[in-house]
Amino acid sequence: MVAACVLGFLIVFVLVGPLIWRIDPNFIEPDTAKMFKLRNKPPSLAHPMGTDQLGRDMLARMMFGGRVSLAVGLVAMFVAIFIGTAVGVMAGFFRRLDGILMRLTDLFLALPLLPLLLVLMMLFRDPVARTLGPRFGTFLLIVLAIGVTSWMSASRVVRGEVLALKEREYVLAARSIGLPNRRIILRHILPNVLSPVLVAATLGIAGAIITESVLSFLGLGFPPDFPTWGRLLYDGIAEIRSYPERVIWPGLAISLTVLSVNYIGDGLRDALDPRIRGR
Amino acid sequence: MAEAAAARRKLVEVQGLKMYFPITAGLLRRKVGDVKAVDDVSFELYEGETLGLVGESGCGKSTAGRAIIRLYDPTAGRVRIDGHDIGSAPQSELRRFRPLMQMVFQDPQASLNPRMTVAAIIGEPLGEHTELRGDALLRRVYELMDAVGLNRSFANRYPHEFSGGQRQRIGIARALALNPKFIVCDEPIAALDVSIQAQVVNLLEELQDRLGLTYLFISHDLSMVRHIADRVAVMYLGRIAEIGPRDGLYERPLHPYTEALLSAVPEPDPNVESRRRRIILKGDVPSPANPPPGCNFSTRCPKVMDICRRIEPVVAEVEPGRRVACHLYDKTIETAGGTAAATEARAPNKETRT
Image (cartoon, rainbow over all chains, first blue to last red; front, top):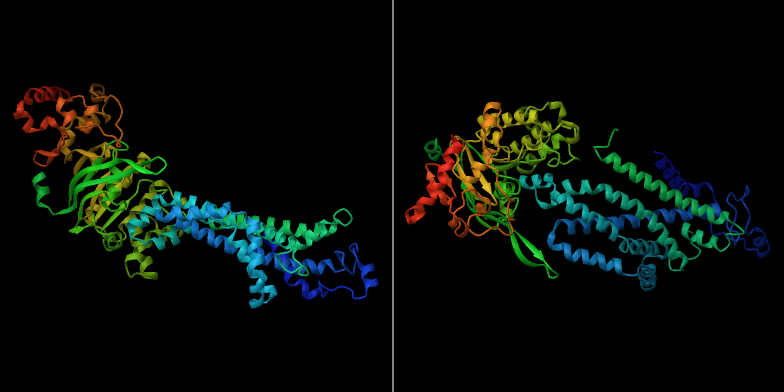
């Protein structure tokens, strides 16, 4: 419950916040002299979280950055879990596909992910940005790239679970009733692999947010003037000794998100399991 | 009794059923052999009777039961149920025959999906094979729950909220949902308390009387099989050792293995119990991956003869309705000069009986 409140607060913060706190996160004082005065300010009433090295308001940047980070985390996690579960169930349930799909998983695991991501971004960022617009194009590309490169652990967990469930007597019973495979998977297998999937999913969100910040840091994620939590974190790290609050805010936001998502995952799993429910 | 049974219609016919599981080894996963879980088993069930299938653990009883209703694809053999060729039909066509044959599983905990309510579990086969939906389906589910003695108010509960006996009732209700003719009961009472076993067995018997069901009752509990079965088949290492009407088989076992098996059943009367002579078999059951040549039982048989180690005995009718796979009763060998050995072997047999 607490976790849901925290995540709810974060979501409200990033969605509703910018409507109330109407400062452009990318606004830089055009007058150079004034801009220099506004740089690296500690928290004050005008700027509750202070300002960064270019005099931009941190609170506004946190709000906009949170939108992107949360969206990337959630969507990339959905992509990864969807691919991972599909591959895992197929591999576990159909013996013939098992070898091929698991070797494919191994292949993806063996790929050095960061160089792969970098090459992906290099090759496709410009064409995608041209057709879909720079922001949405980059978003889609990042989400897909992270999703496609992080489904492996989920698929392995799911495959193992399915292999065990497949031999359970209720699956045999379903077969003796004459249920087609499709329905056995949907009704008997999937609900019972839910708990490991949920755990993998909550961990996936954390991973996705962090991968996105790595990409931003390397200059291949979102455009540099476009704030995300990861970006803010990396911008702040250079000056962590002089201005620690610039690292603390985004770091705190990422940690809170990951933690609350993990607890929600736990709670969801318990709520969906009739054996634990109501205890 | 045997004549009466023969007059009735054969509902299930199993001929030469073989279920081998391949053993693979090495880097290339080459097949190096088979586990002969069920090896050339033939029997038949008449409509409305109960055939008890007994044998020790790992002898292939459950595998045979599962292969008959095609939860496994058998390696060889013919299975006909109610005139339909079940043994060789492709899985896609098998769906039509599913309502005919159902199964009650051993472990009532494992055989019910923990995430489905009782009503959903019992209603699942109905939704799959009938046009019943909504209220009509629920009414049928309630009917089934009444039939197996479950309170209707349990319909929306989950399996973990029930005791073992109640869970087994849910499993039975599910098996009954489609009005099957033939139910394979795969050790339905093995996982239950003794006090609950009787309830479940009585329920099965009552349902049989009311609905005219035919059971293949797989069990290792010999007293329970004696109670419920009309005929009994004894399996050893994937093969049928002896098959015959219950009373005859329990009174006067023919196959040495049956005899040893029955001698292990304790007697309730302490006087009788103290005089009971157990036949204790030496050694272990050979591996089904590498059965001994000749008779499967030859390595442990107390009445083993030379021929047993060389030639595999065939299941032959010794008395009306009773078939045994043992050289002791093989007439051709007796005429060929093995009479002395056979009679000699049979003599102590009589002693143990009296």
